[in-house]
Image (spheres, helix red, strand yellow):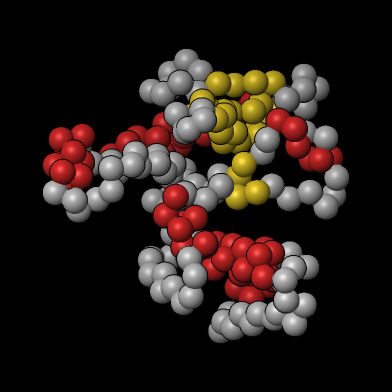
Length: 186
């Protein structure tokens, strides 16, 4: 799109509706396409500015390369490359990114289809950890996503071997309980 600070692509969804798909190519490993919005033409300029702002905030969160190498040499952080975390356009919280493989295109049309949420390496470590894990973070940072993903991971890895396997999720918020119930499979 012309006028954007970052490279944002606009694709017509269909001519009649006037909807546009706003997307970017992101340097994940492997590289991915991130679809930010499907919007009406009159919203494109505003959403382009919000995407630019989000990408600018995402770039600011990263430490300078010299500081990273210094911390790695001192053994304070691991030597693996840190994954870029995109921020939501409306706040400083991680953007929920879903993994959709090209082979799943035919599955998308089914009402029962739900995309797989992309977890960062840190989130994946929490989900796959054995035993009790304490997850701390401010609101919107993905604690509930980690917990519900961990419940689902445990259910899939243990329930097949032990038919008496059960889990209990307790929270003060009914809304939170409903979210976790919907996020965890049957």
